[in-house]
Structure formats: structure tokens, C-alpha cells
Length: 557
Image 1 (cartoon, rainbow, N blue to C red):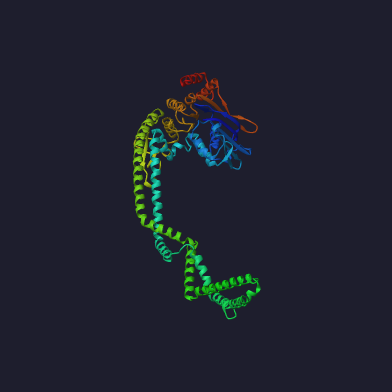
Image 2 (tube, rainbow, N blue to C red):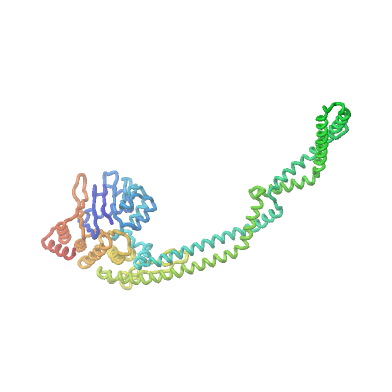
């Protein structure tokens, strides 16, 4: 509930701090005393439209702070928890600062926030009802939620919401599969061509390295063979190293016996050199004979190497990875072949999920129909003492088109009224006059008090245009509402004022400079005097005081 309202420099209010309490809180005062200013100030803190005219003349800025005491788990606190706003467990402070230029700043628990967030938060804390307010009850978007809360349909709502999620998830999977299939079909020719291209070339791991080495050899083959032949001639020719070694060996062997063993090591070395030179000559012969000097072989090696590298570039990969690319392409081709069956399964799953949602939504609609009948009867009972016995309230349920079906079901709920017998029914805010509208909303609130989580209700002259028994009935309903929520009412009716648990008097006084609005909490004696004034007018008589006593006694504790 609202516990404190602090106002600074708003129109006729210079500095004002008000403490509010639970129950029915009444604000009275002469016409023009500033009661509407209080509501404008509260609206400013709740995120309503800010206008430069609200800043008191001569002041640089105006500010309003509203402090709320909420129970744990309130929906507003749960919403704000996602904004990392500090101190939510200790209370909620809404503040709005309005400059003389019309620009404003919004704060929640001293943390800067958007005006939109302030408005959303304020809408969950205070519901303002008056002749000209944009009330929540007039918002058709809120009617379905109010009916569901009244009917206790939370279980059906959850079941429908869960079924809707399953349905939409299934539809999403089917849509994605169709898109993939369509994309695959568009690429089908390319997939088959690319796969055939790679499998036809049949690349082997390491083949690029082998082909590159082979190409290098063949490109320099003639030069290599010529060098090897020249080397072989130098070793084995008529004047080659091998002949020279043979001649040296023969010459030394002829005189070895005469050297007393001194040539033994030399002869061994010559034998080894002769043997190794012979081996080198044979190796050169073999290497030269193994060289492929066929131009066609070189051409074939180059063609395959270049083909492999071109295909790798085409697929933005390495030659050794082409086999992996082929496997991926083959998987996509198989997907095309298997996609039809998978799509059929997904379509079937979506159809089953839609049917399950339809079943849950139907049960929810039936529950809403039953709740609507109970709501209509309950409101009709409330309308009679409010002098609206000829009016008819109807909760209308209409089927939404399928594209509008959602987690909350497939019903559109609208509160409609017909103010006179035979008159066409229409939206609450368009059919009712100002006074009727205030009483209609009061009747609705009296019925929906337990279903609506808003902790503070404000009624601005809900008793306008009525008196006597009707005004007394209005007061009784306001007092009844105050048992389920904090109720603030601005009234000119003594019958309503007498029902208040707490009473404040709004008045104007001369100040320097200008005029100031003041608000005073009234004692029991002050309440009696104020109600007597409301009954008597300009001059308070003893008769008026006696009547005030009677009203206060009849109001109960």
C-alpha cells in the first residue's frame, strides 16, 4: 500500500508530506482547494503524463515521491527484480522530478529508470478511478486477466500456456525443417555435381605432396640424367677414376712383397676405394635408368596436381581435406533423401500439439464462460443499490482468429454495459456517462477486489451526481473494498466521508507569495466538524453537527 506521499513545488503545494494508512482514506475540502492537485502529484510519481504547468510558479522544478509497503512476492517486485534495482526487499520508492521546461526524470529506489518503467510499475501499485481517468478497467486488454483471476482459472491458464509452448515449438521445428528442405532442394543439383566431382577425382591422403615431388623430379629430369651420365663417365670411362684405381692397385701389388708389409694398409684402402667406386658407378647407372623422361608422364602428374588444388580452392579447404568435404556433401544428399520422412514426422507432431492446445484452450474457454456468468450476476447485485438497477453488465467472450491464439487461450474478453433497457450494449467507457462510469467501476471493483492484485485504489468523486441512499451505498462499497485493499477517495459526499477510517482536509491558505494548498489529518472532533460543513454548507448549524454525529455513528468502527 501507499505509505508516504511527499510533494515539492507542485502548483499550489510548496512542501507537503503525507502519511497514509490501511483501510478507507478520505480526502475532503471545498471545491478548488487543491484535491485534484494531490491526484495530479500522485499521478506524476506513478509515471503519468508530465506537464510544465504542474511546476509551481517561480520554482525551478517539482518533485513527488511515493513510498509503498508491499508484501513479499508481489508481482511488481517480481517484475522489477529483473532490472537489478537495489533495496526492493525493504520497500519501494517511486520518484519523479519535473523541470520548469517540462522535462522529467524518473527514479525507483533512487535508481534512474525510464518513465515507461515507472508507469508500468505505478500501474501495478495504484489504480485510479474517476470520471475522466484512463482506468485499467476500461482497458479491454486487461479484461481477460481480471475474469481469469475472478474465476480462479490459474490451473487452466498454466495448462493452456504449456500446451501453447509445445505447439509453437513443434511448429517452429517443422518450419525450420521446411526451410532446410527448400534450401537443400535449391542446392540439390550443386550437391550431386560437387560430390561426383570429388569422388570422381578420388583424392588420397598425402597425394598432393607425392605429386609435387614427382613433378619437380620430372621437370629437371634431363638435367639430372646428364649430370649422372657425366659423373659415371668420370668414374668408369677410359680415363676415369675406376681405371686409375685399378692401375694403382696393380702397380703396388707388383712390388708389395718387397715392401716388408709397409704397403698392406695402402692396398686395403685401394681395394675398398675400388669397391665403393664400383658401387657408386652402379648406383649412378640405376638412378639414371630409373628417371622418367616421358613428357606425357609429366603432363599427367601436373594435370592431376593442378586438378586437386583447384578443387580444394573451390571448396575453400586443403587437398588432404577433400575426402571430409565429400563425406559432408554425401550427408546432405542423404538428408535430402531422408528429409521427406522427417518432415512428415514433424508435421504430425505439430498437428498433435495443436490438437492438445485446442483441447486445453476449450476447457479454459468453458471455465471462462462459467466465470463470466457468475461475474455478471455479482455485478448486477452491486448495481442495484448504486441506482443503476436498469443497467445491464455483460461479460462478452469472442473467439480470436487462429493467428491471435496465444498462451492465454483463444478468447477475447470484453466488459460491456447497456445503461437502459433495450439500449445496445457497448464498451464500458463509451456507453457510460461520467457519474455512471465511476459507479460502474466501483461495482466492478467491489466484485473483483480479491481478483485484482493492485494494492491501492483511488476514487476521484465516485459519488458525483448522487446523494442520499445512493451516496450511502457508495460509501458502504468503498468501505467494503477497503477490507481487501487500501482505498483513497476524494469526495464531496458526507455519507461517503463518514465511512472513512482516516480523514484528511484539503484547504487553501494565503501565503507569501501567492496561495498554498495544505492537507491536515483530522481528529474525531475535526471529522465531525468537516462532515457537518459538508452537510450544512457555508454556515455550520447544530442540526448539521447532529446529523454528522448520526452519520459517524452509523458508519461503525
